[in-house]
Length: 367
Image 1 (tube, rainbow, N blue to C red):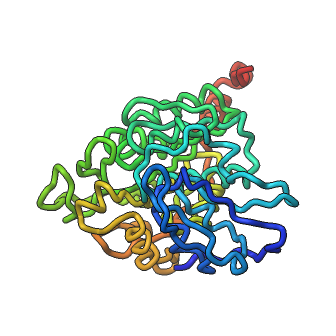
Image 2: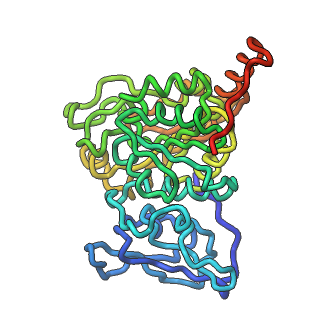
């Protein structure tokens, strides 16, 4: 399933800027450019990676796909006329901390791009946005975003976020963490936050493995996939996160891969605009521990797999029960759930008001 091409912009007004020192040579921008505008340089940057170069500037439509898909924030469209000379993530990401610690070909940076663009498109006030993450590779997002952020203890991101949502109901609370952190040690919080329809958006970066802790089997690792703790292949049934989230009561549930950046961005935007619990599962490559151990190639190979093996969810054909992911098999993607029900705060206020009448006074928003 290919990404839609953007509307062509006037090449006289736009150019592509590349920060070669941020680049880790993943090749995403070159491989997935719909116009074959880019190629990899023969030269090395100071870190030993080949950055991209603009091979055919006349072919570029300035669709922004390379800017969205690049996990290192290393390429962007600029225009003096349109007063854009920085990456889309520059406003909300601490670029002084780049290059980041994520491996070449890791998809977490791409998810951050989609989150930033979704926040901008949804016109959510950055001063009223809170980012919460747990422990792990994705947990480092809290340290890179230039927003109020909380890098919490392992598995407790949703627990912290629940308290934050209750204590500051005027804030947009967003949890960004990995599949292991959110659904293993943090699984109980995940289930009950969805059941209670807690006021938060959860972005789960699912790379099928425990990354930062060394490559152990995770709750989402497909059967037969190799991990440090399952050297002969995983044998447990993995979690089907969309099915679990829907069963527990989530208002909004979607799954996309880091290849589908426009769809992922739009899904995050839709999730942010929901009042209650929303889940966006982002399937992302972990080339170092999942890809290498399973002989699947690098991050680019995994992205190509997502492109070839993703199947669009259709309500008349599928349910979330069909969203299981098997090893190197088709991945069901799309919007699975979009419904309305009272959020945790609304339900609490309604219940207490009915029981206590005028004696019940909702607490004021802090500040």
